[in-house]
Amino acid sequence: MKTFTRNLLTIGVLAATLPAVALAQDMIGPKDGSREFTLSGTGTSDKDFDNSSMGVSVDYGWYTSSHMVWGLRQSLNYADIEGENASDDFWNGSTRGYLDYHFLDGAARPFVGASLGGIYGDGVKDSGFAGLEFGLKYYALPSTFILARAEYQFFFSSGNEAEDNFDDGAFSYVLGVGYHF
Image (cartoon, rainbow, N blue to C red; front, side):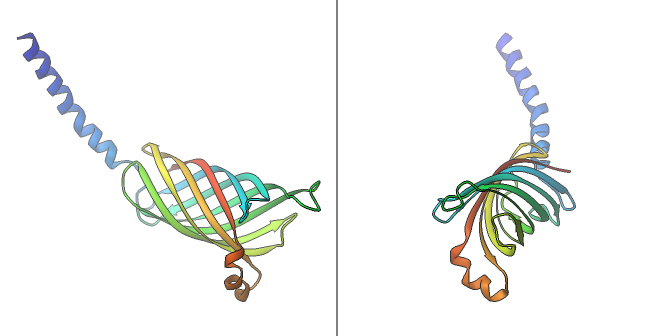
């Protein structure tokens, strides 16, 4: 009789808990109209990984659906360049718009996207750049996620240069945390 009562109590607790777990799963991730703020550490390297930089990136986005986010991204970087100017330290920034499409609806949400903007500062030629990106957001809490993103960026000063410079791009990668509201 004691085992029967314990099993009945266990079934009752599970029956009361499962709807709450299912509801929490439905609430993971953004909805249409949500906003998003992300703070990330960044790193970049040239295609041969010889020269590198590190910095911080801040994203602010607007969800037009639970899978599509448009936004603005601001990065500030410190660069240590090898070669003739090895003793020079460089600071630069970039500002760009982005569009990302998220797959899946659970806690792990992979995405692909693109960005377009400008880069400016010491040690870089002020120019435009475009990029393709992919990554993963993992929701540790219903509105809070861990972000990993990689971008391939190519630089240009005119439309003709964009096509020519695609093969001479650079990789950028970030790891950060974000929150949607």
